[in-house]
Each structure stands twice: as C-alpha cells, then as structure tokens.
Length: 168
Image 1 (cartoon, helix red, strand yellow):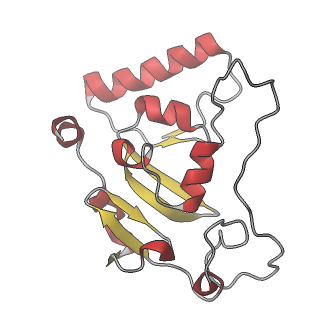
Image 2: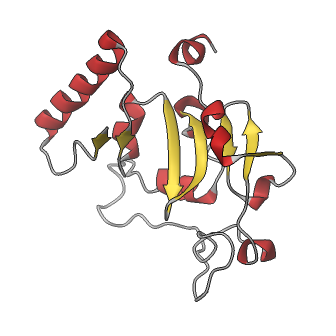
Image 3: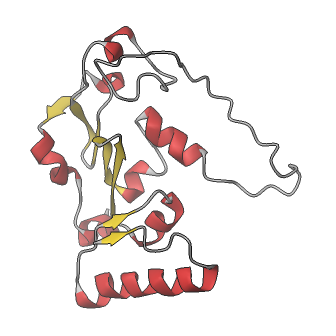
C-alpha cells in the first residue's frame, strides 16, 4: 500500500520512488495499491485506475481506457486540472471553461451533483449505480443509465491483467 508516496518530495527523489515501485511490480510481480491525487504519477506506474469522490467510486477501469476517454464528469475535471505546458500562455492565466453548478445544500443523490457540469434532475434524487460502459470501464453516473448495472463488488471485473492490457 503506497499512500501518497511522492507528495512533498523533490523531483529526483520522486523519480527514485516511482522507479522502485515500478520494479516491485515488474520484477517481483508485487501488486501495489497506489493512493494519490496526482494523476500524472498514477499514469506512470498504474495498470488500473479507480477514481473516488467523497468515498465513493465514480469511475474504474484500465488506465489506457480512462485517461484518454474519461467518462465521469469528475474524472474529466481531474484530467482537465493537470497543467498543460504552453509557452504562449502567461503563467496563471489558464481558466476552466466548465460551468459548475453550486448552491445545493442537501444532497440526497449523487455526491458530485453540486459541482457537476452534466447535472440532471435525477442526480439530486438518487445515488447512481455503477454502469459498465465498456469491457474495462465502469462509471457511477446517470449519463450511462442505459448501460448494464454493476454490483459494487464487481468493480475488479473492469480491471484487466497487465498481459491483457499489453495485448489489447
């Protein structure tokens, strides 16, 4: 279990820690649960990804499926928040063009509803199930309510073995 192992460390130590974790995985076959807010480091060492918001899974699946094509609005916002270097843009001038709904005081439904740019009436009334969007991706969002409903205990079925991912 690696809980924020590279937060608050300099770049050289960060690289050393990530390399050590990668060696544990690749050379010794050790599974690592890597807990982080930093999607860039998670992307470097992870095969599978589980995005949580306020203690609930909102999206899970393979790294290769989720990062290029995020499905849950929260996952999209997380990916959008990763800084993109652009020498033509002055530092601090990047803005998020997404509209965020705010002001809901009591949430009965989706925990992300008060911040979600894709909010629907049903989001305030009930908690969305986990829906299987693709073979290796599930998301807890009513945007996918026409998809197969997954049991919370079946989240791991959306993950692929490393060999499967490489051969895909």
